[in-house]
Image 1 (cartoon, helix red, strand yellow):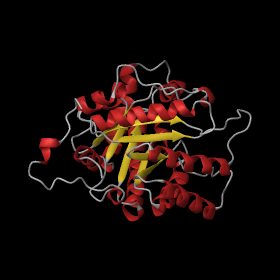
Image 2: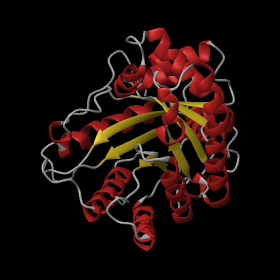
Image 3: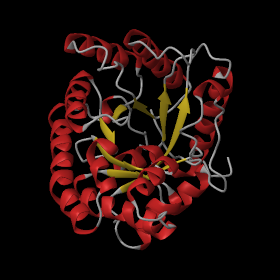
Image 4: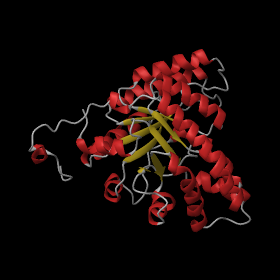
Length: 325
C-alpha cells in the first residue's frame, strides 16, 4: 500500500487506464554535444532550451508525462506554456555525468536541486539514474544513495523512478547478453527491496547479440517476476523499430509502459527550422501514437502492483504526515 500523495502523483504521470507513456527529454551534456556537431557555432542556452521546447510542443499531446531537466526542460517549458497542467512532470536528481567510466562511478546529485524542490514546483516524480553492478566495489555506495533517496522521497510523498544501468567490470570485455539479463534481474530485485516506486528498466537482452525473441520473452518474464513495483521500459538509444518491438514484448510481459527519448526524436537533432518541425509533427507524432497504442493494448495497469491508500475514516488527514516528519 502506498500513501495518498504518491498514489496521486502516479496517476498524474499515467493514462486513465494506468499506463506510463512518458517522453524523456532530460538529456543534458550528451545531447548538447550532439546538437553542436551540426550547428554552425556552439549553441546557446536559449537555443538548447528551444530545441527541448520543440520536442515537447509536438510530442507531449500524445504523452501522459514528461521527464525533463529543470534548467532547459520543464522550467522554460512550463513558463512558455509548452507543458500544460494535464501533463505530469518528472525531474532527474542525478548530475549529468553519463560519460563517466561506470567502474569508478559515484552517485552524484545535481547541484542546487533536490526532492523538496521537485515537490515544490508541482512535480509528479523524481528520477535517479545509477550505474550498478552487484560485484563492483561501488555497489554498497549505490545502495546507500538509493536508500537515502527513497527516504527523502517518502518524506515528501513523491514517487521515485529508479534507472539502474548495467555494465561490465572488465573494460576490455563488453557485457554478454546472458550477463546483461542476470544484472537487470538482480538490479530489479535489489532496488525493489530498497523501496523504490517505479523501475525504469533496461531491456534485459542485448538484441544485437541475441536475435531469438523466445529468449527475449524469457528474460522479460524473469525481469517481471523480480519486480514488486511497476516498471516501464527505457529506450536506451536503440532505433525506433527495435524499441517498438521491445515495447510490445515488454508490455506483454508485465511492463506498465515506456519512458522514451531518442528512439522517437533522435533524427530531430540533425534538423532545424521547418525541417525539424515537419519531422516531429509527422514521424515523431506517429511514433508516439504507435507506442501509446501498444501500452494501451498490452501494458499492465500500474495499480495492479500498488495497493490504493486507505482513507476510510473521515479524520484520516489528522494523522497524515507533514513534510517536517
